[in-house]
Image 1 (tube, rainbow, N blue to C red):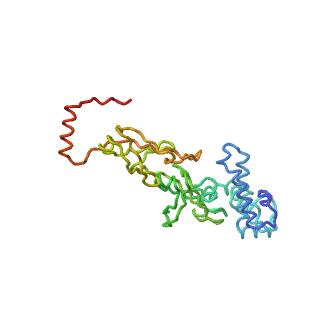
Image 2: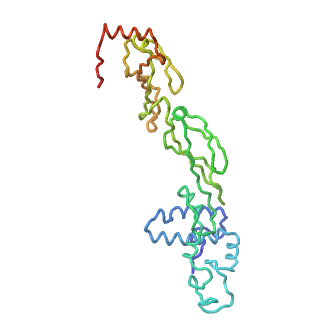
Image 3: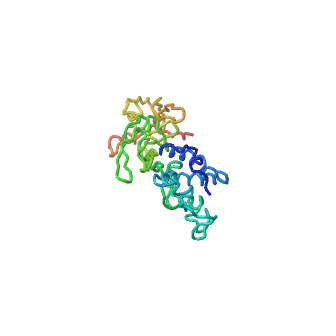
Length: 307
């Protein structure tokens, strides 16, 4: 025979439905086989706790048990019947005994909700029955730009069930960071689960990330590279004016301090490195061509290979 289900859950006979549900959830988290691999003692205790909640978590079953109409295994109590057997030749927990013992109830239970709560998911396939647990969590991938990961902001995310929610992206958000939206998961008898929003930072058309630093190519005209100039340069916060020194060779690096990304661990702002890229006019220019011909003839030079 099964033990007293109230004792299995550690609650009194006057316990409310919420107290019973809370006791079961706490015990299930501690004893679940996925968290106690190979621990036979905890596995057996988990079976008993599950069966106890299967009885006390059902209002009708609990009332019948309290009135003495069914036993702790959920079987009818035969008034006036003598002997150890049951009609049909069965015994408590044995063949023909009216539904089996804790093992049968354990195998027939529906763990979708509790696995969703404990492990962020969990599928069906262990039968019906249900638990008074919260619904399963749902996971959604949200792509954001580098600018969003630095400054934060609000982004809209769509769920498979058609719902659309606005998500607040924190400053310094990192690739793979997971944001939790309470109560936005799958519904459950004890309330819905949560939505887990996993952030993915899109590749940027201008900036290349290296840790907390950003790198970019800065197009510079030939005259500006020779004579020096002030040019507009993009940053995650918008364009700024950058000074190009005289005789700036291609590949020269200019540093914009504190204009990079944010390190997720230290929250330190990195730098932005602009690499000079000398660009000729898109269309052929006759005067520039003549100038280059004279220069090459009268003042030839061999560019040095940079390490």
